[in-house]
Image 1 (cartoon, rainbow, N blue to C red):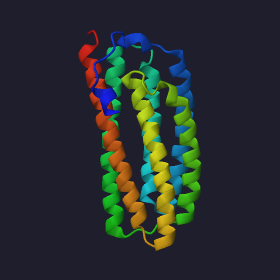
Image 2 (image 1 turned 180 degrees about the vertical axis):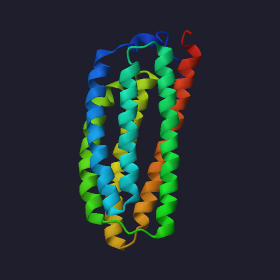
Image 3 (image 1 turned 60 degrees about the vertical axis):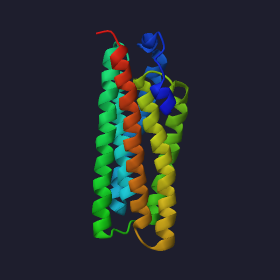
Image 4 (image 1 turned 30 degrees about the horizontal axis):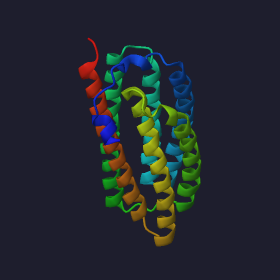
Length: 209
């Protein structure tokens, strides 16, 4: 991933402009993420789970990112790269927000519902695996599509971690597994943000004014 981000750009960076396949995939994953955000944020608040709330915020951030991607997919490379830069910064902000959530739950000793975490985690994983499959073919596209794929990749890993956290909460009777997983998800968001920001800045440097 880092190598692809830092390698010299191809000669025809604007070959992805107004890609119809991008549009179809982005509409599909936008719908999936919007529905899952509504379902998971309610479940996360009801269960008192930091990792579910973090995952719900990922869905919200991804839905917003896909909407931005749809808006700029027909524009020139400079606009698409600028949108990707904004998305990368947003990913970083969400990661920092999750860090704050982790601190709050750790300070209050929250004990989430392991059953709710597991049930919602399975549904979220299925939704993200479907989105991941749709975006796989476009993972090496421009920074706009790469940022969409990175978001979904992080979500799949986050969903698996939520399921592990549910097992940990059930087995230990404490909220620490949930807190640890939420912290890992925050790290993934911050790492993904760095990759997207670097790639988008590279494109901005070579894109015509």
